[in-house]
Image 1 (cartoon, helix red, strand yellow):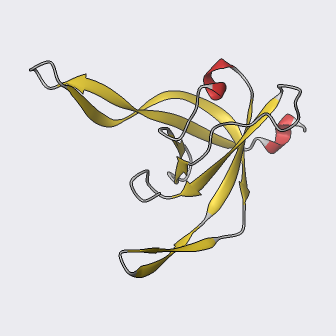
Image 2 (cartoon, rainbow, N blue to C red; image 1 turned 120 degrees about the vertical axis):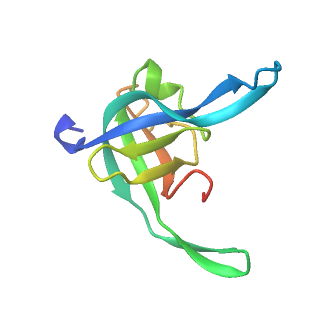
Length: 116
């Protein structure tokens, strides 16, 4: 796959863990850990029932170059498009589809981490 397909710049963010002053861990806001070029591939949308209401979900595949930082991603992370501000909640860990360790794919849904 040529690198020209990696047209999006995504900020990969993870929740910061802090201290409440009494020694208890507190989950904080999302903080950007690294930024990388990515390809966003839309998938067929689905509908989910949440709170007795039908809600549309738009899944996407995020394709990245494989390196140490991208291989550490999991479902607790999120990606934010640096240009549009769209939030992608990562729903699956990275998968090395080509088995050459050059690019990895992961599934995500458009929306905030709390929504997904």
